[in-house]
Amino acid sequence: MSNPDFASKVAIVTGGGSGIGEACAVLLAGRGAQVVIADRDLDAARRVAGEIGDSAAAFGIDVSDPAGCEAMVSRTLDTFGRLDVAVNNAGIGGQQALTGNFPLDNWEKVIAVNLSGVFFSMRAEIPAMLGEGGSIVNMASVLGSVGAVGSVAYVSAKHGVVGMTRTAALEYARQGIRINSVGPGFVETPMLPAGTARVRPWGSSRTPLGRRGTAHEVAELVAFLASDRASNITGSYHLVDGGYTAR
Ligand code: NAP
Image 1 (cartoon, helix red, strand yellow):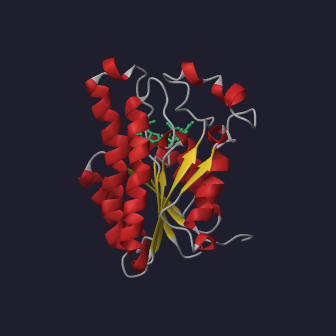
Image 2 (cartoon, protein in one colour):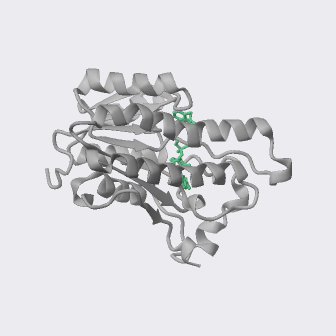
Image 3 (tube, helix red, strand yellow):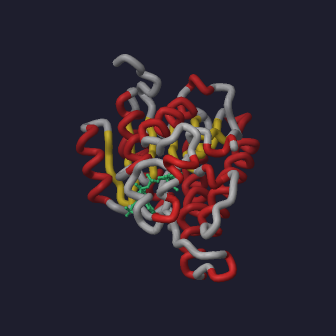
């Protein structure tokens, strides 16, 4: 194995059945991890686990359900015996509407998955890491640091993920659990086409590098932060956005 950063380590990737989560699961497995792919789309999780092989397992969960997140960790411990790495990546895009007119039901849904889902995941994962230590990477967005017209729920959730990451990192640094967040710019995944036609031009015209990112480019950053190579990095927020927020 050329880069065995995760040999004998066990990782959970939420939303690992598609897009960025799939790329993270494949990269972590390729570097030696046993990987639990947890997704509400169980068929998608099974497809990715099947492509990885015996070192992967697929679980169907909804991260907006705290009991589901507890079950995800219990089943990980039952299956692989430990938990070293968690990539809390599951998320949804949300509708486009101005704040004064934003649909209440979509606000509740986006906050439940993109904000509470990360909290419920960490709340279940951290106790399983106490003692041995571990590394958590939470998926925020560039919209964890800048606003976007029409996306109040998504932007609020992603700013919240950055803040909860910093707080949990402070709380668990002395117990050897590092917790960081990642802020991708616009990335080619199945999430983007639905309801995001308005932002489609951003990939080329408003990103200094002149293109959208790839899921693999995000996964490379996630894998670095999750690994012992990032042993002095915690509580921080790392952009992978083609220079979008440098303007
Ligand atoms: P994606 O291709 O749609 O993948 C997300 C996966 O998460 C899907 O398999 C989805 O299942 C699953 N999921 C959604 N809600 C869930 C829930 N409640 N519980 C468990 N699984 C759930 O999206 P992506 O683009 O890879 O996005 C992954 C993360 O990156 C998200 O947090 C997103 O906000 C963030 N992000 C994406 C971009 C981008 O440009 N793509 C940019 C910045 C940040 P379903 O297919 O059933 O929904």
